[in-house]
Length: 349
Image (cartoon, rainbow, N blue to C red; front, side, top):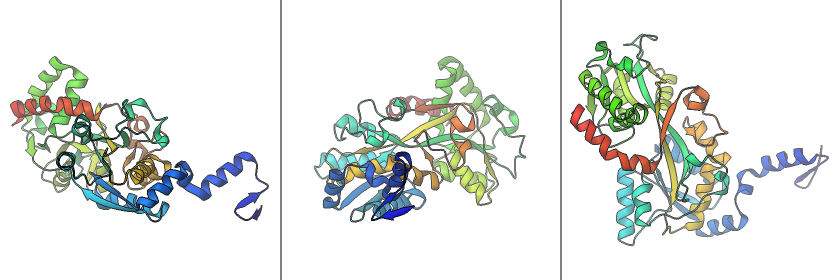
């Protein structure tokens, strides 16, 4: 192959296209005018629910490398705290965020009129379930919530693999879940049971489950899993399955259970309507759903939303792991969460 200047000679059209994609990367995916405008703004402020060291910082660094001259400023909070912060800033006319993510963060902001309608080109062909039909959010990664067990306390092969198996008296007093208002806690588990079994059968099951004396802890799903790994409990309900894999690779005695249906939650990204850096915001959102951005999710053991991109451990995603899941949109979760929490308070407190 002879290379003259930047372009190789002697390549067919398909090979040339592949070569061009390789040398220019994601920059060609975004509009040149948008890139120029974003670089003029020089910064994007990202309010994120993602774990900073695991994903947010690596993603920011990858973006800054791809688009030199645009700095990413991070602000970390959970979905509820982040939504409240954004609402307060916007109501006061002092919005600081350009881009924000979370499982339900967008819902109150969308209702208040503080979210921009915009769908990045990179995700326009994604499944309808992964994007807001009105264009206010797009999924960046998937969360799959399942039980996990301490493999030092529960020999592999004896763990409960169905919802019915959780009712076995031998598990009474040995299980734990989060008590917060979240999909990754008891309310999310309750919502999945009701969605799958229906109201009547689901409530009958939950009343039986309440007899198992499940410990409710006001901690994150990650902390619940850590307590189980430490041997405080045998089984953790409603934890992120990728967290169990990460810990197991580090030598922890833990395995997740592909109990069907697993709870599925979408982590979605949106742009603030009053973004201080609107072009950088669009470029950053485009990056997160691009092949390059989705590869960062993959490398950091998250589950990419892109249907064409497998997880680092393919068995974590329902379609590749061959297990059934029930995904909830941000709007559906926000609407039904009060009901799920009420049932939790009545049966499990």
